[in-house]
Amino acid sequence: MPYGRYWEEFRVGEVIKHWPGRTITEADCTWFALLTMNQHPLHSDAHYAEKHTQHKQRVVPGPLVFSIGIGMTVADVSGKAIANLEIEKITHEHPTFIGDTIYAESTVLDLRESRQGDRGTVTVETRVTNQRGERVMTFRRTALVPKKNHPTLGEGKLPA
Image: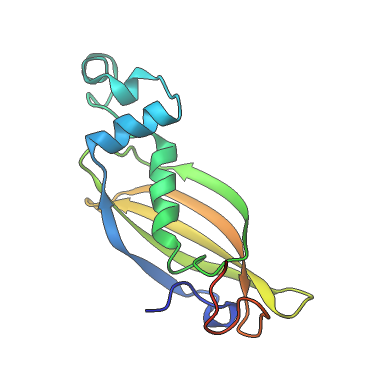
């Protein structure tokens, strides 16, 4: 099964639905907060969250939602990428809670061929939604992707 796309395989305006979704567990939330040294009790203290926050429950750290969301796009957007060049904007639109399942879809916004002629950039906007259909996050990113004529990443060759 192919992994990733060549530059020529993208179309401006194309909407790519990424699959599968991902249910965020308590372990995901706890470990991510620990690994990133995020000590805010909103993410780790259920009693604090219930008594002192508007949502009355723990909230999944936004960077975890982003990490999973961007990970969901790799097979379809940057699986063959030479480099990830830019993350332009991340917008948190609704909170994500433990037990939520998130889904992602991306729209191809821009394609630019490089001067080398064997690669180009792909810019996408990704929308992350939960199982209730609420948009929880939006972000844009640009990746440098090989064309089919790329000398080391062309047809059938995988990056080292």
